[in-house]
Image 1: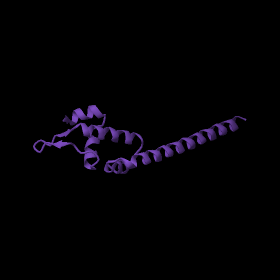
Image 2 (image 1 turned 180 degrees about the horizontal axis):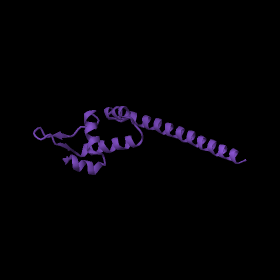
Image 3 (image 1 turned 90 degrees about the vertical axis):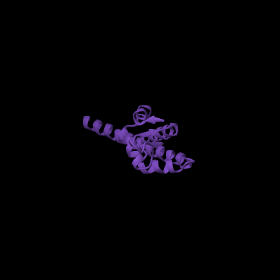
Image 4 (image 1 turned 180 degrees about the vertical axis):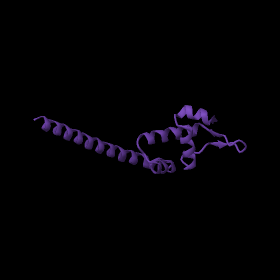
Length: 111
């Protein structure tokens, strides 16, 4: 079992994030001491925390992360990741088109 401070160091998630994830039932401590209310995490919690950190990095919303965590088989994860990739690729195309438009505008101003 890991104290919250140890778990923060291991995962890179902040204490506030861990508390929020517990509040919204995304990642609950493996054990909470009934006397001092200290939270403890285990190796399974570590796997879940790392998955949540990666999903957040990929731009998943809390609702999307909840859906992934509820689906213990992670069957929807691949489809959601494909959707995220397609959305990111569309944003890249849009930004590249904007950059080209800026270049054309600058060029027309120099002529």
